[in-house]
Amino acid sequence: MLRSARAVWRVLRLMVHIFHGLLVVLLRFPSLSQAQQQARVQAWAMQMLACIGIEMEVRGEPALRGPVLMVANHISWLDIPVLHAARYCRFISKSDVRDWPIVGTLATAAGTLYIERTSRRDALRVVQRMGEALEEREVLAVFPEGTTGDGRVLLPFHANLLQAAIATNAPVQPVGLRFVDKASGEISYAPSYIGDETLVGSIWRTLIAPRIVAVVHYGALESPEGQERRAWSEHLHARVDALRAS
Image 1: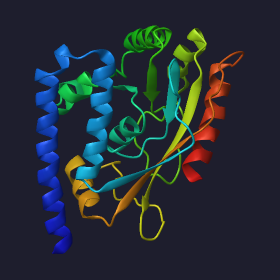
Image 2: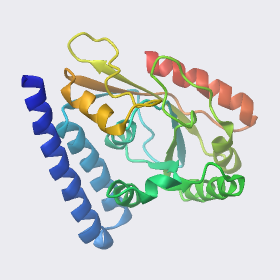
Image 3: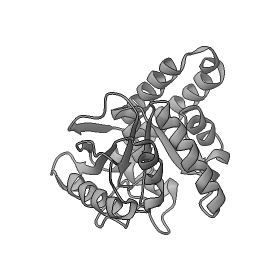
């Protein structure tokens, strides 16, 4: 009963926070500089985690400035706000997110680049756009697994999104994510969002769970110089796998 009441309170706080963010995006963002917008996105993400009772622990050092391509494992709908809260970055996301009510507006305002995964031509377009963003010294982030995993086994990486880093000679930073039960220190699977799970069910399970800590572990920057895309993808897969477990 107490957990349910706490979850309902968190839902109310989250809804207020989301609609406040929407108002800021619609009314304030047009008059803000890019740096100010990015700072607002990071602050909003940090406040969102606080609203739903998620603590954050950062290990290692995120890149201070771009160009950098971050590659991380993908577990949950929480991954993006967690990474935004730790260090602002622009995400590459599937194109249908753009059309989601409210979420699409917020994601677009946060600088998301969209990709139509079934179209090879669009994938090439996005790689080109990623290269342009890296040349503009931006920090990008991708989930090379292409979908969420269960947090137990790291899925194979899709190597194609690394091409932008290779083409622009931009370093890649591997990032390991995991969610931990604060009391026990054991891995928490409450935020998982895989298979037939619904987003609503995953959110509710997260809200009623015991206190969760999101652990973000940044690895050392990896240079693309002399790298072959597929072999480098396998190397980065091993680095992310190690970071998410340490």
